[in-house]
Image (cartoon, rainbow, N blue to C red; front, top):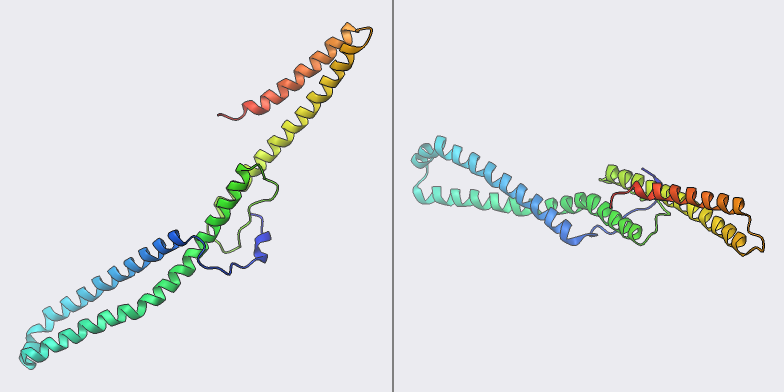
Length: 199
């Protein structure tokens, strides 16, 4: 992974809003469900073991007000924790959303034909192995394009030689055959390069 990206800091935490809000929502739902289940288990266990004793100590009205107060405090605690969970979710999601955004932009530039610069992510971002794979793909395409450009250059030169031979007053058959063989060989090199790809 090319590490030129360590020099930039991502200042905007909402990069892919839909993805990040869905991610934060999932985390919030998971934390809420966990809190509700834990509260229910503790609450239910306590009422099973101490319910009769509490009913003997407190009058029914007082016991119900205690139960309601406990319910309120559990709910209030969950509401207090929710903003913290949301902030942690946004921070964690931007370590995924940021790389996804950069990868999408890089792939869009590849589609437009620009593979001059490598894809760079920050050192602590997620998806670095995916970015490495995309960079290997881009390097492979770049290498293939350079070979094809070289083959096209050679073919152009050979075609100029053929044109010169064809327009000369005295056509040298052996020179013409050599030029044709050379052109045929260069076309074969280009064909082999192109045939590596399944389309």
